[in-house]
Length: 400
Image 1: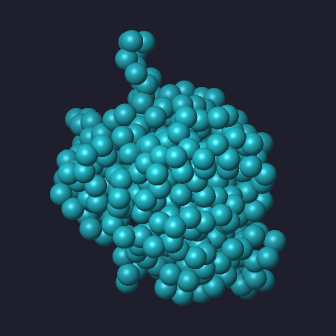
Image 2: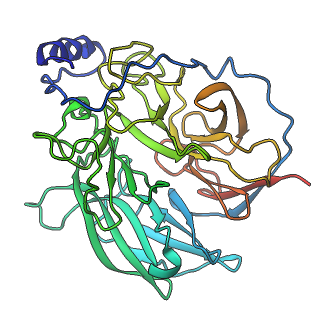
């Protein structure tokens, strides 16, 4: 374990690319996590030649406002969030005019914050639970802004009966996270950013710069890695993250893979990461390791993207609908303006390629029940160049 002196020294070394930060507290011991050697370090300029996949791309929805996340109900309804604070529904081939929910207290643009992550409960067909993550700006200025996760119940195409599950994620205009996904264990996993306060990633009393794990009702699982440890929030599953937004689990192994935004311009270019998280309690290293540096007890990335691609979402493709893609991890990117395909052999990266590009910044992607890839553009987010139809949700299928 790093001592406070060692942590302080490492943080001081980072002063060349960020404002000086006070020393982070030494992290408590976690389950054994030997230093991982990078399996692959691949830049976008050294990817293998593209496969000869023929893809059909069509615009499913247009004129949206920064769609952030997408989910499918068992009956085929598609729901999605818009960062401005609306939850929308697409069903029977058309967009329902009235939103399912309009938040009045969510963070407004311009900012990376706002209404973000969305997922439905694995037993949605019986309980109709929908989970949202958003940055809250209370009307009472004496209250503290935060990012939180709230459970709603869907009734007659409306979201009602809000139940706040967890609050207190750091809330700034940038680096807010915040993806929510159910894992194969039935637990809810939440990615949180460190709001440009890099020390928070190693601060075990902060929920920032982490991946959290809670039960579907907001309680803490008794088998979380830090339950019962003094000075540690029990919701923490993994720490030392910067701004993770893409998580999914590999079929057959149930191992979590994750992608997150790296330092980019703060320390030269690049540093975005693709990671394997194969144990609870891992220290992913930010801000103590990055750009190829290593440290005992910290997890090194499988891929580091340089120059930066700004990975915004990630999903395994487990369908047979697009031949040749099954088992690949797909990453949507903002700065990269593309979907990257990562080819894996178990935990080993064997290659990557650009699967799709040409529609500007891409915010998220999911695989629908039909095996199509649904991807949201993010050209109205203040950093892109919006076209006449932006923002859009695109549907990608195999060309017949």
